[in-house]
Length: 351
Ligand code: NAD
Image (cartoon, rainbow, N blue to C red; front, side, top):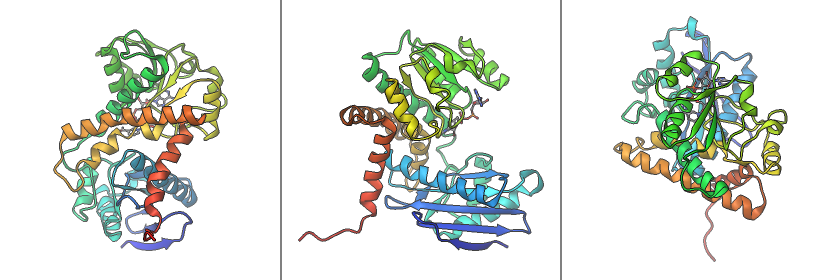
């Protein structure tokens, strides 16, 4: 049986812990902000070192979703679920049945979806317990839309920084060619870019090798590649005081979450005159696609059009950053906050 405990966390609308020792998991749902709509965010399954680590993760990730959803112009707030368990020792069907009940417990304040270690198949089990789950229906794999959003953002950044309307002849160094980086590589190659790749997974390199030509460098060398665009599409925290001085690019634009080690690294990039396209602005294509199946008939055409708007958002961020002489990550934060904080304020009557 699930046992629920409400936690009082400053700055968060609702944080609930769920304990089910019979099935063998603990889980948290954090709802950061619902000013713009119900909180959408995936359900991550991980074996954390401690309860504190799981709670820290769910708080960080749910807040990030508020910013991402707000900046993307979605009528959705930010939330996240994390499940602390050892997947090899639990019955997956039982686990996700109980997670479905946990999501239902919040009565629509939080809408879940797949994430690290949870799949569309798991979400189908969740769906038997609650209607508050996305990515079961027609929208499918979000990665093609994330890659499309990154591509649109690159077009906008290149136009601004390099004054070019096309990408032919530009060199792009891509860190990680999995679900998103691989698709991005294919698109950029089709546009005539020279592609340089690093990946630690040989299989993903081989898959891409069958589709396009590229130069391969080691995971460590990717930071030293002379290129126009560096596209981080793997890990978080890779833009830091060790890697930033090494970069030889004009633009950073990739799908990875939490690319900056700290917000201050955005200032370091600005000082180096490298245009950084903020991660939660550029990688919103997946969540935009998912949003198109919430409360409406899904249309991939509509999802593609909405994803194309990422280019406009990026242009706006870059121009404001130039006007205000601020790093782009700071401007993106401000623009997102303007949307959800304004909506959070109590409405006052005009006098
Ligand atoms: P993925 O697992 O399919 O691909 C990641 C690739 O990076 C893999 O091929 C992996 O081998 C490689 N990699 C890992 N460590 C590396 C290293 N040190 N150097 C070089 N390559 C390395 O993941 P994905 O779905 O493409 O997501 C990539 C990033 O984008 C993640 O940070 C993810 O959170 C973020 N993101 C993805 C989506 C989406 O729709 N898939 C949406 C938003 C954000």
